[in-house]
Length: 402
Image (cartoon, rainbow, N blue to C red; front, side, top):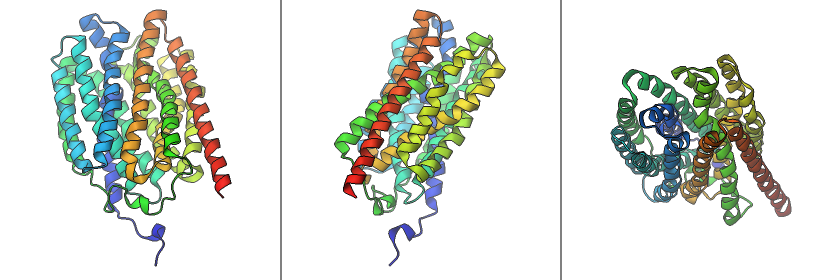
């Protein structure tokens, strides 16, 4: 009888991974930092402050955080395809309605719903689904799927900037809603659960973590708070920072797009690295990379300098989320992976929301982005310390059990 690891895996698993990447590109690219291109136009249209407009994105991320928990539990019990179709409908409706919003609370409410029922339905369930299709090379597969998010996080703000200049912010939001309907619904039908059930084919060969889930989930959740609060600052505020420093308009989205294109390579590279040296080690390397370069944004004074620096920063930044996702997969039970991923990612999105909001708040108070990026560096160091502690405890447990 062949070992489980030697049994051929279905080629369809790569179709699922690539479809997941395309789905996350549109959905998460719109929700995670797609509003960055709308910050200045909304301020000019309504006279709001930077913290207030930044909070629109934060409400969407809070929605993803809370919705991800509920949708993760739901995805452990019903077809992932069904969950994704719910998300596609919710995102389309929320974006179309937001084009007609006239009050700040309306934007907050609509993006919260888009996050809760839209983003929450996609990220945790889809990543858990991809991991369930792979016995071997799950790090690479998850890296490819999450790379789709990086593509979207670059393309959506970049494209939105030019849409806003061409047709205005209201029509730009309407077009985003149409794009979501056209792209997300067909891709949702490709989110087919693994043939071996919710645990997936991967569950046949997993040995399980040496750490108790009651320890792992809280530790990972606190760690991602710091990781995502830090990365949210350049994601949300890089475009307005460049606009201030360089005095440019829509072209300020170019370096962000390049950063996130570079992050595609980073997500795939660190996914493969996780398969080689282990998820927690790969996560620590990526976090150290991102944190060390964070304050470098404050030293730049020309658009050309931003174009160069974002390549260096983006590669390490891209590996951070892959490290998170692969670590969750490695340290949680297969049968509860969607819900566990949803819980951990809830704290990740809360970190994103807090980081983006504090960036706007500190800018309003200080009139500069220095303290926003300094705080992001502190958040990264907090994350690195917690991941290191998890790794040391897991290594000690492994030695004691051997």
